Length: 271
Image (cartoon, rainbow, N blue to C red; front, side):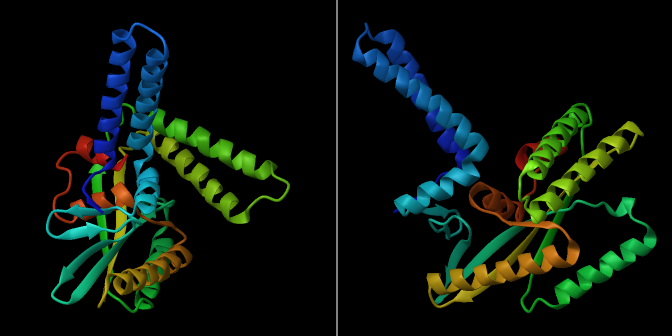
């Protein structure tokens, strides 16, 4: 089945269902119809929130079960797994995958020697990759009016996750390491804001493409490349790398053509 949609469209549709349910509550005189309308209103409202905030998680589950292929402009298509983008040129299929890269350390917080070593690690990591990779970085000035409050909230959440993991009888070492880095990162950002530093937002992602004589072959190859790249970057640079899906992947694909023109638009698109 071919279809074209995104999480915002699904959330709007859910809002419409909620409004229909709300109208039904007031329009019906009572009985089972009121209960049905109220249920419709509640489900629509909940669906709107879930699709708007967690569409990148829900849409792949929905499309996999329904075997839905999403078609987008230019002859590109997104398979039910929602983790690659496909296009056919002649008899060859091209599949592209996107990886999100989250940095925990800033180069401004490192010494010159540490930055040199970090650059060497990056060069060694890239030199070990046997296929082309495209790295994209977008930088913008953050509006600090609400930024500090958001950082303090994220800092508290990271501390809570860290404390809960530490309290487990057998804590996960990898999770502990990641949570400790998150806490340190948010704490450093808050301290820099207090000292008068003007923050910059950074979004980094990587793109890799593979070919195949069939969709399945191209998808299998690009997933293999993405997994290899993910492991290489995470180990060499000590960063968090995630395989982007659904709307998060589609955003990166759109950014290959046109990026948000303002800082506020960038923040809205990124978060």
